Image (cartoon, rainbow, N blue to C red; front, side, top):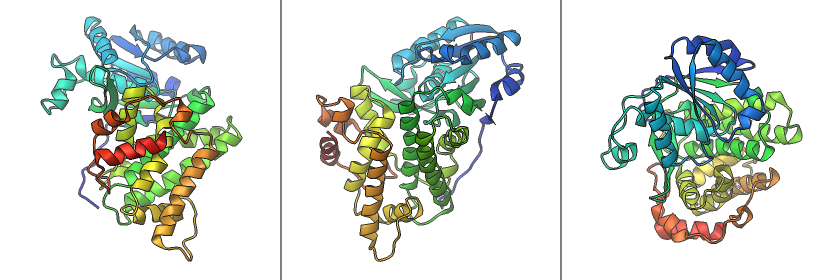
Length: 385
């Protein structure tokens, strides 16, 4: 394994009634004015909004609402939130929702404490924010694991870039699986596939020999696959949902990444696809992964072969490494079809898009076993159409 230092700042409250049991004590540590951030208003339909507002009022907090955070949060929306936080002298941010809301608030938290444009700071000056408004997250839509790290995926529409931006860690995260039970099933499955993708992208990094982090990762992948299937059989299965919610957090809380340089090349390609199309992230990953992985052969065959045997249960008897690697991609492709995710961009309604611009603007990651050229990424995208 590579050298690492591990320390984690986010306290997790997991389980039934986690908000009512633990949020009052956390709010006692915060300032008077709390920004309540959420998306399109689903939390008002499922009762979460009323519950949290009641807790905030009981704690004597003044509530500033920051609403309308979109599924692919934009930099314009980040700046709107930062302006509101400054204007209202917000002392604490409570982000309620899925990865989009949670990511957006990480950068709002940083921008509200800086007079320097965060995008310019990070991408032009190569500096990172050091001061933040304290935050807590209440997860109502799982998959991204965004509550467990300080990175945020933000779309800069003027630049046609969807990039990872570094922001604040959450002081605490509330994960009550019951809050996710009203998610539409297509969102449940696409979110869970994002968790699987995070795990695969970490696994495919270096070192590429068998290591402890990857062995934990294999168990995480098996768990996600098993519980996606269980959820499709019985959408009301609380145990399966609890497992998926925690697996999503595990995939992004750093545990699987200890001693690793991660891959995430598929994510980078999907981010730019999203910058140009505003497509659903999990669905885009489902389309891209098998095609990109075929283009990673034979460089990635050793890890693909291990995944076939250790995650997908393919017997290695009588098979070469290349044959096992091929069986992994087949198993992944078949699973994507089995769980009802798209296999082409056309199925997602994507046809008329500048594939060449997407390929050229995609970040190339250090951890990927194959160093893709613009032409190779363009070939991947054309196959996906």
